[in-house]
Image (cartoon, rainbow, N blue to C red):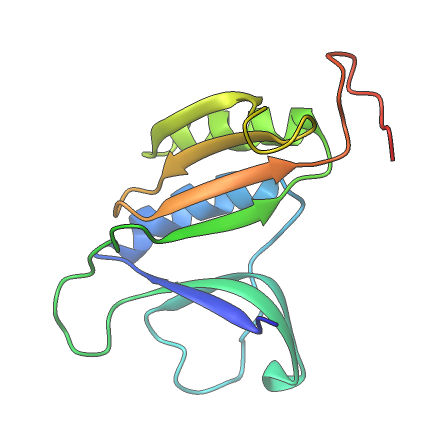
Length: 144
């Protein structure tokens, strides 16, 4: 359904430090837009190939209208993790790079028995969830 998600930032360098560290824990690196025009003020993580013909990415940018970036109330981006350890590493990297916790890593039994998640806000206040499904025991053994 989604091609990309874009979140605003007030400080691109600060956002770069946060997302470089947090997204690396999920195996994502920066999108390569070298040689393409009009990418000043934009950074992305995920897949971006053939000038966007193939794209599934999370981008941060300075708002086009020049006004300060703001976080949406009720807006949240959910990211997939492949293990509980990735959820924990993402949460730790986010906090170490200017993020704030909105929920420590743990099972969220009110959603599903295997819904292991953590919630953070990036330095601009955008809310992110990182979720692993399919693991039900503390040993991290897959049930899928």
